Image 1 (cartoon, rainbow, N blue to C red):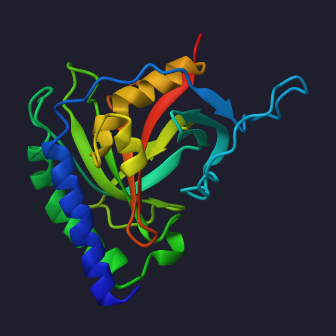
Image 2 (tube, rainbow, N blue to C red; image 1 turned 135 degrees about the horizontal axis):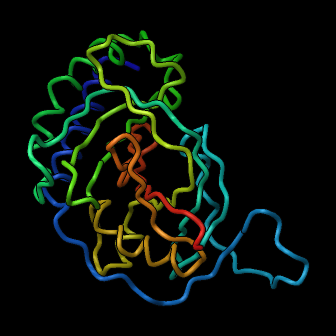
Length: 249
């Protein structure tokens, strides 16, 4: 990746993180129009009716995840994916106090180390062969649904092996199911906007999940609960929101 592109990439990602942190305090109401599952996996029964055509589902956003089901809601594609336990390496920060409704101060704590990681591991391309998705980064948010735990965030890369300087933060994302949604003008339309931040669509993602046999699930593992992932790839120009789900009991 050329040096100038690398610089633009990290500056864009940092700007996105700042804007996202500053705007996570509110979520619009979700639409309750029924959804239609399309391309369900495993293979549907022979009695299932033909489903409507729509845009081709995106290729796997991360090569380690597996598409489980595709769901159409008001013409917008939602997807259920199965992700293994993935190692993320980068910069992580938590509020020193207990839960803080304003997560924007976290950006200041995460920014400096992320800049170091970018300079040493991304800009010189020394770690590209170890990156699962070389041109993408994740902004992970923690404990946002647990008021008794300090909330946190992480800017990181998915990696095959966590062989990095000990000063970098390492987090193992639990394996499980996630509902994902591409953040664009079509998904923003669901909440009456032309564009929006990923977190603004969390409520409708939860609604779509619940209408189709899933439920949001925020387990605490070693004191940390992964709330959501914002998956950014400036090279192919997409942002996806991921929320952890499980089958309804």
